[in-house]
Structures are given as structure tokens and as C-alpha cells.
Length: 594
Image 1 (cartoon, rainbow, N blue to C red):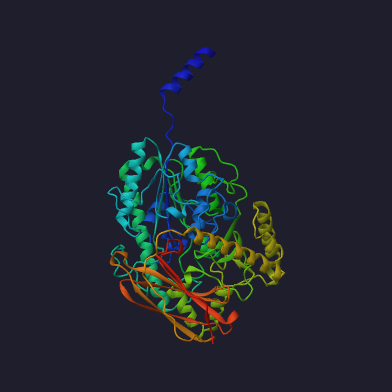
Image 2 (image 1 turned 120 degrees about the vertical axis):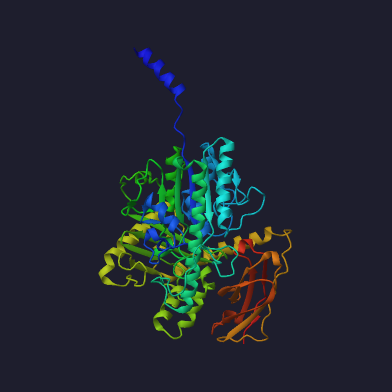
């Protein structure tokens, strides 16, 4: 009998195929707040009909967060399962070599065809990365897909599915939708959106003032959200037509909040809250909701490894939430830890956060009342409007000051104040909760080896925090210098812009800089970033971002500080979406201020 059973078992192994591994379709949008999605409570009807329909067939996670409020480090957390201070990917620079595997490596080892479209350089520690089998940002006809073109997302998805079929493998496809990242949709945009929202109908987030100019920018943002939804619909249409839908695990989320003040490049609730939706046919229950457990981006990779049955590498900071995908419960899911280190220009404003179901605690060691926050949102029409209104409205002036200088500790009641308007850190009634959140953050810093720990332990000593920040700034400066040194012999930069300064610059007064530009027609519209710097070390004071095309002259005005260290200022400008991929960069010598 025993021999007969073994023979039958052997026969079954031979004749019955192994269960097919599920495909993985991982869809992100760029710079979209969670509450811009209808299925997550958007106050504006019609922003995301395709995403909403998908959510009705899937499982939503209402308490999901990303770790970081800017895209390069945020995406590296997702696909490494490690915090930025453990990967070294803390800003917009490449980290090579690395001593740990990321998703592309692990899925390839698990037998998957690994492919990506969009945000390619942001999704791995360095680029080009050998783990990808294909980059479907290049379309089958050899052309480069435009990041704002809806139909190209359908084409890229079909190409990835076809590539996997030809390879005889399941696919792991990470497709990244560019919208609603700036530049937003605009009336002359050749890449249409299926619905245009008007300024009078859009909701104004509670963390921003209500002003006509801000509403105009929000209308462009929400029209871009709708175009992101159009792209999402095109992706799912390609999946459905392929016949692979029933064997595909689909995950959708945003890399962080909207690209406006108090959202992007911050750690506030709306900075990191992400509309996480998961659909795994036969596993997830349609229309189900997890509104109990806190999960975050550092948990994505371990979860995906469990979905495909692959072994976890050593050193992961996150843990799988596959039981939650299946509708089960999981212990120790009441907290997420968040961190921010550096912006795209290499400027350090380190911050740490711990968020529980009710409270959010933020630690800002760089805040000394003098340093200012360097952020991409400083170039927005919304921020410029807030700066203008600050002279007339004391409440807005307080918000502007907080945005620029912050305070060392912030503590918010997220249940009652998700817009983070009332800092409770100094209120005695919340002293015990504040103490507990400090304790949890400290334990996490110790366990994860966070380099901010000395500054946190010395948070009542301004000198200790200043020493830490200066050390981080020195490391960043050395890294930037090394990159510049490594570019010797690289391609000569194009002659696209120039800087013209006025004859005199006076402390405490406005200065206007002219930027003549001549952009070839094939470059279309480009962003021009212009920066005012001050002091012998040329630290950034302010940055303005404008659009330019063809031939013309931009005029940029800055308020020169009343007190200028060393009595000198400087100016810099670059053309392009981000500094790392600029088309031209200019910097003046220090100029004396009267």
C-alpha cells in the first residue's frame, strides 16, 4: 500500500501542472494626494472614474503611507524594502555599488520577466540597472513614449505583456504614470485630458488658503489627476485584452502628495497618505476595505515576495502584509515611521516622523529660525500667492513662516486635524501622548540605525542639532562636488539661457534678474529654475521656477534679505525638470550687496 501511494504521488506530480505564478502589475501615479481619488473621499466628483471602478473590484487600504515626501527616495523604499538611511538613497543621486538586492533582482531570480516604464532612474539605486529585462518607456516602434500621452500607457502595457509571453515567463511590470506631477495639464497641452475642471468647482485643501490664484492652479492639478486616471484606464484595458487579468496581482498607489505647499517634500499626513488599492483575483474580496491596519511603502517588497512565493533577503526593514491582502488581521500594525533628508537640488532639511492611528509627531533638527526649507513647491503659483497674501493676512503669514522655518517639534491630532493646522507640542493636555510618540521614534531610530539619532537625543540642545545638520550639509556638498568632478569630459552643455544681473543689489530690497533664453523648437516648453543664494557659502535663499519656450526673456524677482552674511549674494539657473538631468546649468560669482 505504501509503495502504491508513492507511485500515485509521483504520477500526480508528473501529470498535474504546477500552479501558475501570478503576474505583477504595479501602477504608480506621480504627486497625487490620497484624497484626490473619488474612492478615497475626494470632494470633487469625477476626478478618477477608472480608479474608482477598480477600487470597487479590489481591496482598499485606508491607512497606507509612503515613507518619503519626494519621489526618488520614496520609490526606492517601495522596491528595496529598506528605509532611505539604510540604502543611502536619501536624495536625487545614484548609489553604486549596492550590497543589497532590489525588486528587479529578486523577481528576475524568481523566474519573472521584469519591466518598467517611467521613473526609471528613480526606481532603483542607480541607472541603468541590470535587473530590468526591458524598459518600455521605449515603444515597439522605437520612439520614446511621452510621459503625458494617455494611449502610450496602453502601448507600453501590451508590449510588457507580449515580452513576457515571448520569454515564456510571468511578468513583473512597474508602470509609472507621470500625472499629476508638474507641469500640469493646460489649455494648449497637446496631450488631452478627458475632463477639465474649473477654478470655481475645485475643493481647496485645508492646509492651503482659499484664493482665486490658488484655485486656478488647483483646477490644473485636478485636470491632471483626471488625465492620470485616463492613463490608468488605458493600462487596465491592455491587461483585460491580453487575457491575463485573472492571473494578475495589481497594486495601485501614489508616490506622495500633491506638488503644492504642505504636501510634497514634507512628512505631513497629506504628504505621505497614499491611495493603496490591491486586486488579486480569487484572493481579494471585491469592495473590501482595511481601515484598521497601518501599512507603508517599506512593506511593499516583502509583501510582493510572499505573493510570488520568493524568499526574503536579509536586511529588509519592512514586513509582509499579505495576511491583510487576504482579509485577515495582523498584529503590530498601529504605527508607521517616515523620513525626509534631501531635495532634488541636494539641499538637506532632515525630518523624521512617527504616525499612529490618531497622532503624528514630527522632528525637524534643521529648524533654528534661520535656515529655510528648500522645496520644489516654492516655484508654484500657490506658494507665490501665499507669499503675497502674507503681507495682508497674519494667519497666512504664520503659515508661510512655518513652511519656511518650521519648528523643532510638531504634534498633530490626525483624527481631528488631518490638515495639520494646530501644533499640540506645547499643549499640556497632550504631554503624555507626545512623550509616547517621542519614545517610539527613538526606539525606531536605535533599531534601524538612523543617523539622525544624535540630533534627536540632543533636541533640547541647539548646538547638538546644528552640529548634526552641518555634518549632513557637508556630506551633501562633498557628494555634489564629486559628481561635478566626475562630469569632466562629459557632453558640453547647450547654450540655452543666460543670466543678466542689475548693476546694483541692495540688502532688504527687491532684485530682478533677467534670463534670456533661446530654446530649440524640439525642446518644446521647459522649466527654468532660478535661485538666489547668499553668503560666502552661497546657501539658497529662494528659488523660482518658470516655463519657457522658444526665444525670449524671463524676469525673476527676489526679496534680498535685510542681513546678508558676508555681504554677498549669487544667482544660479538651470533648464530641465530636475537638476540631475538638466540641459544647462549656470552660476554667477558672488556679487557684493550694498
